[in-house]
Length: 334
Ligand code: AQP
Image 1 (cartoon, rainbow, N blue to C red):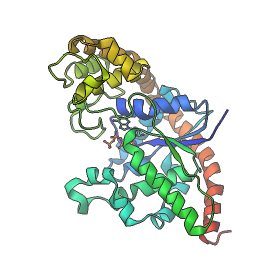
Image 2 (image 1 turned 30 degrees about the vertical axis):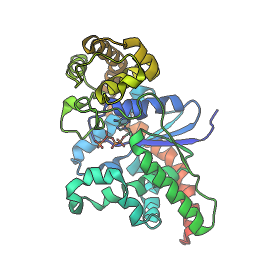
Image 3 (image 1 turned 135 degrees about the horizontal axis):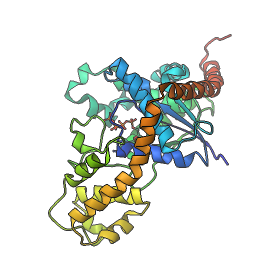
């Protein structure tokens, strides 16, 4: 039975990785039994940095294929790409006029992505969190499953909803709750335990791509950075050992254990043996998804039909909400 409405999305920017799977997509699958779920391929977010047009079409289908292959049921849940539903852009404009410059200036993801080239970053990258708030609130979503890195953007979404409600003297938008679930809410790079596993890391060895074959997964895990000590006996022993912490977190998430159980299982063991078991487990969990993704990618018409059907259903929810928002704001409409 649905206890609320979920919205979440993944950017079609290539290199879908284990962090995206464990932090987001796997939770999307599980939540569809308890919530009304809307899962989006956020292509408008993707173009906040340059995307090759032909590649964007392909990576959009790839994320949709990953949703389907991981087990999201397109009849039960809605799967679509963002640019097919106009409400996202329309509500984002209104939110551009609600959010304050100071709020956006505090967003760490913008600082990280724009880096030293702030003056050269697109305006879209700066107002990205406003579009994300519009994505969520165009459906009055009550919950948003995300990885830990998106927590700050979710807080901004709540601030926007609150300010909109206050400014116009209404109780219109819900104050949306993040759902940060599982033992691997922030999967770290295999090359550096202090930075997040990320699609845009120039080193392919830093991440396990969902579509990597068994040999590649095994090689990347074998070469993953570790320290010279054996695995710790207790959870406290993971302190100041970010790489061991990350690999045990991945094991825990993939094997459906808690971190404490994972530590206990390998206590005092050698990394070489642990890495072999981790590689086998990662292959066991990811290979069926990769195989199904490949099959779906060979049927682009089917994937496009799923996205078109989802877009029509998403539009049917968002359109009346946007109409109400226009009335609240004072826009004349027919
Ligand atoms: N390392 C991660 N661990 C756990 N969850 C993660 N997510 C991303 N990285 C990790 C979650 O995946 C969902 C989709 O992310 P996104 O496509 O919107 O973009 P992102 O968060 O910016 O992801 P990337 O992979 O790090 O891309 P780049 O390199 O382009 O910045 C989100 O729920 C996110 O939390």
